[in-house]
Length: 180
Image 1 (tube, rainbow, N blue to C red):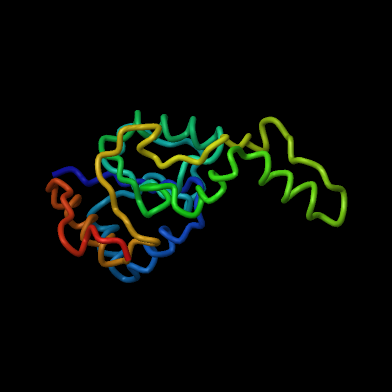
Image 2 (image 1 turned 60 degrees about the vertical axis):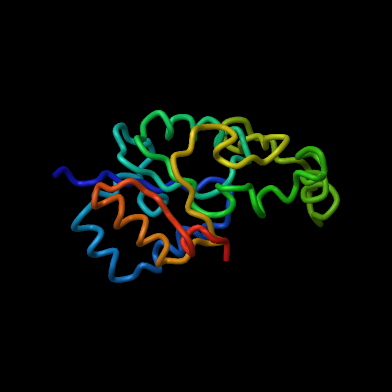
């Protein structure tokens, strides 16, 4: 049986889901014997690879770069898993949505509160433009499975990964799909 090609992606969020992934501790050594981690923010790889078997996507879609990147990730991945509550619902990242657009947040952060040189960050090609609304991953691309939690506990992540490595369909039931 071919080794699972696994990726993780970090979009608009706090990286707590990746911290929970790292809390798998010694089991990560076992995972390395069963799967090839081909892309993750923990490694310095610039281009998302082709033919990824499964990807855990942390974070919501909050800016233009996220919007474009998630489409590439979806196109190049067989199984896309929304990883954590920001990816599943928008969660904390979407707290700015009730303000109607990104502009009030930018104005408050960059024009009203700074002590020195207040100005909006506009550097095309360097600072991605915020989307007017933060959206969960499934609002932009097809999601195959959801791994909820803020962050998902390591045991839930391990169960999902063990299921994938075993070549079984990812179906979480009962306590594994409850929030908190």
